[in-house]
Length: 324
Image (cartoon, rainbow, N blue to C red; front, side, top):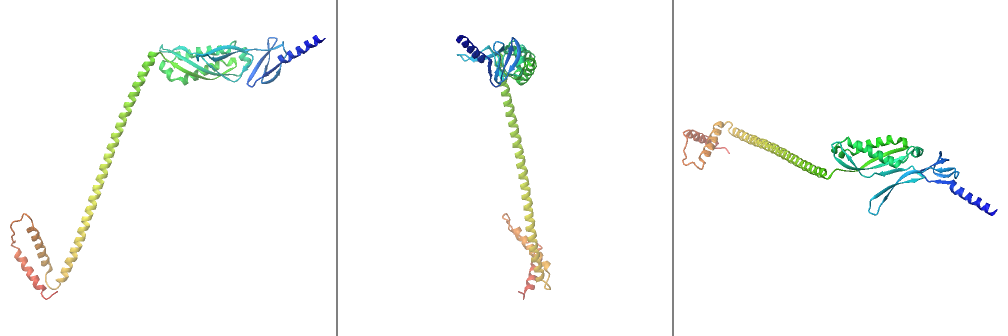
């Protein structure tokens, strides 16, 4: 009796241990009953019937860093199916471009299991299938492009490869979110030639920029000189105008003063003589003085008409006698 009770207790403990399944968040477990799909366990506390129900394992790729720093990847079996986004770092592979250049490419693939049932029953080894599918499609895409296009078209390759993989893996319950090409490495001799070409292009662009800068500087200098000449001409023009206006105003003032002086002379000679003869005589004497005042004049002579002028002056003298 105690032995039977002990067996019952042990069986109950085993039943509880094997019958209770706790699933973590963002994980599911596929349960088979007698080898046939029964149900999918979601996150939380779940009960199954031991010996009748059993989880169906799925292949999973695991990567670890070795002692020398390299990455070692291997495939293991797991009862838990992770629904989170996963990343596969595929090893480098040699790919031949359209112009027969062998290049080395490695890629990163971000994918997510959206249907656990399809991921388990739709494909035997899901990680290996995704890896081989990615490699073959990458070879096909790069094989249709030349080396130069491959080097400058990473985004286009990523988009095309993601679309092809997402469509192909849909029947496996997998969604491919992103594909990233990490490295595209051409052969050493081609890399050296490309470096020389890039250096020549940079030097060419530098010479072009320098020539354009000198051209722009020459244009700016010419424009500056033209503006300066225009400003100078405008200044000289304005100065000449102001000078002419000043001379004109001075002449007007001088003429007004002379007009007033003549008017006074006329008023002084009113009813006493002929003022016009007086004015002519004074102007004649002033002119005569200016002629004889030159530094190079050696002989002073008296014009013939001077006697008439002097007689006029004597007549003027007689008219002023007795007047203040």
